[in-house]
Image 1: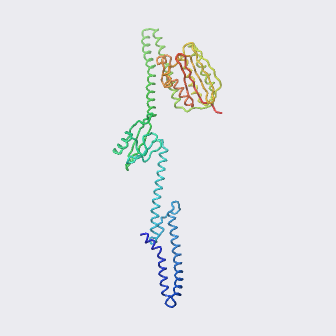
Image 2 (image 1 turned 180 degrees about the vertical axis):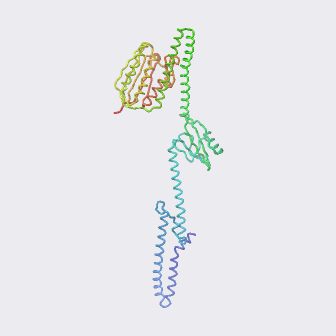
Length: 440
């Protein structure tokens, strides 16, 4: 129905009133003067018109109120406006328009809410997610995806791997995975893509750099551990076979010699296994934290090495003052023990190893220094790696496993501390273990 029709229907009662005025003039004019008849007709018409207009106004006011109520999205009214207003009512077309408008608004609000929920969900994920539109626009990308710098504003950056993956996924109709390298320093990204029915492609990105590094570390560790275990086992096997031959021929001197080899390599193997177990515990166990006096740990460990130092004619000195820290006593003892063992192992006869504690404002420091052969500067950056040895041949002769300093580093980091080294060839080395002090 047109707007004019609606207006005509609304104004219908007024038209009726106008016709009533004209009729009244003719009827009343028949028996009186035309002036009096006109006055009476006008009066009668005004009364009729007022009554009709009042009723019409009340009805349309009520109808408009109901339509307005239906139009308010936050009102309690759930019935549509067109269901309230009769089809014969001149306001019914207006009610239909209001219903359509409300449906569009509610649909738009629902879409907006769903979009916000989607963005909040994707934004909270650790995974990096992007949605690529059919025309190549980035319909959505959470913050972590944008950090990978494989996108530019609203488009896919000229990254051949990403573009190829999106295109190939659309063509294949199944999820695909590729790897690419981005950024400086270079990072390895593992990209996965899946095409939607409407042509959009969902792309996920995972920074595989750290997992690749850890995998490489695990492979190296297994290879190094296997090699380190294989060496003493092979020596034990060879010595045992030679020992058997010596005993068969009654060669007691040779038997004594190879018996000593077996004992030496068995001891070395035991040290290696113990260090591997210590390292495993440090990496996997939860710290048993309590207030600890580092001085007590240092004194206890120094006393345990006095016999070994005396056998090598090495002077072992200690200067310990009370230093309270919050830490795991077993792990801290392990760290101090490995530092002292390393110093004695790398100090020549008649040398000196000093162990001292210094208290700073925030940390307690345990410094183990020696006047041994020192460490070349090229080896310092790798000194705390597992199985790293400055002198491979000498370390094996001295019974070192190559794990002691790695253990110290793990203990320090687990306690929120650090381990540093200063060294000069021919002058010696000084290792400083720093552990946060107890507050308050």
